[in-house]
Length: 113
Image (cartoon, rainbow, N blue to C red):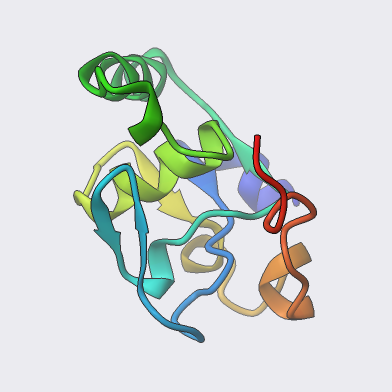
């Protein structure tokens, strides 16, 4: 965890991390490695926050907003090659975290909001 805390970039868990099929969030096709429906993330700087806010503001149709809020925005930004975020296993390659290694479904995946 020290390596993650000391990282200079914001980071998120890549839930599928290449193990499943492509999904779609807010009309954007998300490769499995960038599906950030995980349970651990850290925002390090204002540039990352600004990028999330800009994305949210650009989605004018409420029905296209991600179901899981920030995690969906992370996925979209990662798929657009954001320079503000890294997938946690790219920082600490020898570790696995949470949903990524458990084959667990997100607790809200079957519920409508």
